[in-house]
Every structure is written in C-alpha cells, then in structure tokens.
Amino acid sequence: AQTVTQSQPEMSVQEAETVTLSCTYDTSESDYYLFWYKQPPSRQMILVIRQEAYKQQNATENRFSVNFQKAAKSFSLKISDSQLGDAAMYFCAYRASEAGGTSYGKLTFGQGTILTVHP
Amino acid sequence: NAGVTQTPKFRILKIGQSMTLQCTQDMNHNYMYWYRQDPGMGLKLIYYSVGAGITDKGEVPNGYNVSRSTTEDFPLRLELAAPSQTSVYFCASTQRGGPELTDTQYFGPGTRLTVL
Image (spheres, rainbow over the protein chains, first blue to last red):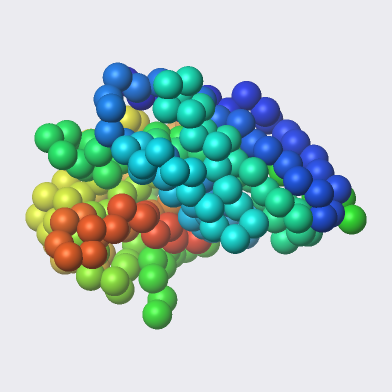
C-alpha cells in the first residue's frame, strides 16, 4: 500500500522569505501523480500544484515550485516570497496512475504541515 | 459556477442517531468521493463512486453508506452515530477519462460533525 509521510508537523516563515515543506512517499509503482493541497482555516481543500511522475521537469505555479526526486521518493514544496495568505495546513497527496490500475482516483494524504507566516 | 457543495456545514448528533450528509456537484463529473479528516490528520477515503449507480468502499467504510442515483448527487449516510465518527467530512469530484483527462479533485467546503 502506498504511504505518504510529512515529517514536519509545523513550519514558520517570515513574510517575503522562502520556505520548503517536505514530503516522502512509498510506492512500488513507476507511474503516479503527486499533489500539494492547501487547507486554510475555511477548511476548503485547494490544489496548489501537481506533478506527474513520468515528467522529469519539476512543476511550478507562480511562487510555488516542487523538488521531485523520484529515486528518493521525495516531493518537497517550495514557497517563495511568502505571503500572509499562504498561512494554512498543507497536505502532500499521492495518486496512482490510471493505466491498468484500480485506484479509481483515490488520493492518499500525508498528515499535513501547518505553515505560519509572520509579518 | 458552484462546484462542489455540501450541507450542512455543522452538525451535532447524539450517539445512535442517524443523518445524511449531502453532496452535489454541478461540473458533470463522473467520479465522486467521500473523505473524513480527523483532527491533525490527513484525509481518508470512506467511499467512492465512478458513476451513477456504482459505488465502492474506500479505506474506512464501516458505519457509513452511500448511494449515487444521479451524476450530481452523492449522499453519505450515518446510520448509528458513534463518537468515533466525530470528524470533518469532505466530498470531492473529478472527471476521469474523456478529452479533458483531468485528475484534479475538486473539494467541497466540508461538514464538521460532532457525535456526543
């Protein structure tokens, strides 16, 4: 079974600085997808960024980028120029590839990292 | 565009009571999911549906039931509420297959349920 581990229960960063959130996962599959979701106090789950395992290039979305190390099964999220609105719980999630699989799109989540942004 | 809507937002139940959590999506997505999130934890899959009339169990289905009579609606039923079901419940949907081939799950705002 796939597992996702976020080893940092809490992180903090000063406004305008950069912070990196860690995520490791365990899978025997070669094709899969990884995600970072943001959950603000409103509890809504918001997709931040997505990475396809078959792509070597790291995904970026504006101030958010990932460092995807497939061999190490590591998927960290870097937030540049942190803003007060970035404060939230961040979840790393894994989804198996559809091809030949029976995952039915199921997401496996890590435990989450609470990010605090200091003004 | 409403996306995924859930009702109610909050609910307190007594042990043994039953209730239905409603979930509706207006994006014509074929796949829908129910997750629960316990305090300080990630989400765990309760049930999922790949289309109207088709449902299946996820990781933690005990104590719950679902139905999918339409594409839009995917209600979650708690028959005999227990304190262990105190959690935040999220409904999500996505479109699998077809020209868009998106794998992005769209989440509702969640329902906070307390069982006393």
